[in-house]
Length: 246
Image (cartoon, rainbow, N blue to C red; front, side, top):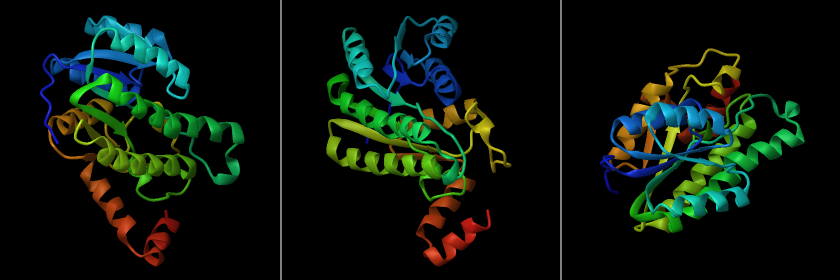
């Protein structure tokens, strides 16, 4: 895997209208990157572009393959990318009995299928050795109470990224980002105390440092992620007993 120097690199960020994606745009801009900003909502993207002095804003709904095709054509018209990042995700905590069919379809369309469509676009957009950066979550390490469908979608994303790492090598440098709890409008939905919760700008620095390094996965905060990685490796008799007490 190749480390990245962000100076003058052209990087596409999907999900840049708020939360981690917006914070990451500010961080990469500060490190010298040239950004393409995308999300479903254009107005906050235009505000961010004006703040950073950027010119490339491309509206995109990752769950719509036709929208992605249009965005790909627009972006490629200005040249290839050095990295492409998707932070787009839906999060709707609750028990299985509370999940409606419409919400379930929408979540899977964005979190899993949207990631797949985005990854399929990478070979035609990235320079040789460019980075494809996909967000999983520590929620994908193990099924946790009240996060069933989100956890399941992120577990599937992690599995997909592991496969892409092999399939796309060495032409594309595939990276996995696995954040813990970060203060965003999504995590505001949680009705419990979030352990080791981080601010979005601190998370963005961790992500940028990970992209600048050589590791396949960037996960944080370590005090949380190592515990969850251990939970995944325990026998079910122990791990399910522990999660049942959460």
